[in-house]
Length: 146
Image (cartoon, rainbow, N blue to C red; front, side, top):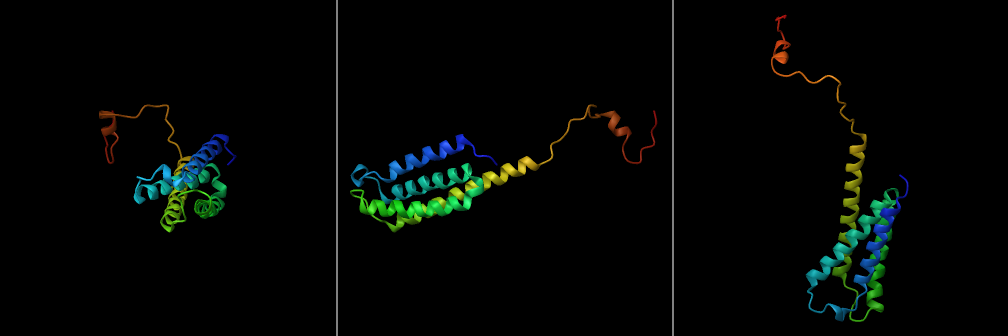
């Protein structure tokens, strides 16, 4: 499958937006609870892994490996550089769940796409289908001749 620039652009745009969201200082969203921030990590990494696996289907395993390194790297970066943020194992596990979901969705999409591509298509016949009385005359064991 050739590289598709549109898919790569979508995956890159999602990656930039996810990085901006992951590197916001802690004081930007103090009122958000841990459930919402954990859900945000799942959503960011589902999109990250899923869109890159969709854009580069032959390299999906490498995408997952790279996404794991990105997840660990972003948590480490948050701990060291981003004010008000730290390394949280809950967020790291949420990242891993998101990576798995993204990979699974990309794989499901690819499988459905491949099944549709190899499914034989129905051909329309030139003659219209028989209806009504014409069909009953040709039933099994019928000896009616017109």
